[in-house]
Length: 118
Image (cartoon, rainbow, N blue to C red; front, top):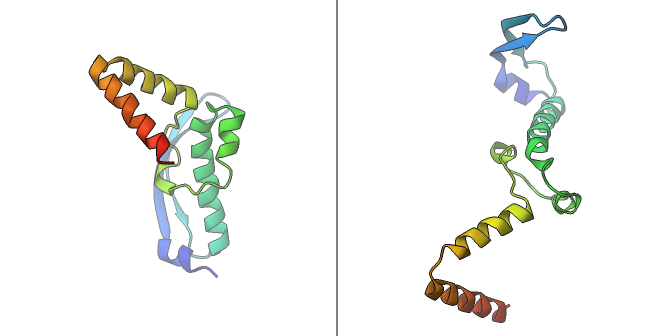
């Protein structure tokens, strides 16, 4: 089936490219999707999003990466920065340290109450 390609039609795109001789050129090309199969377009989209996701995922530990297995990602947000467990812990510690002693006491009480409810 090629309904997605017919809906997309031709798309114009401008980009820069540097060849093996370090010569840079700016091009504008059109890609016509009219005859592309739906399965092919879906595959191209997924490949693009996986490449975008790999950039921030490289900063995660193997254990954190394995936790991503089976996750459903929103296409628009897949390339956004992912915080490691260490980064989350550091941010929480910084926020806690910025609290007054009274706020820290209340925070601890709230956490203990939540822990008791589970």
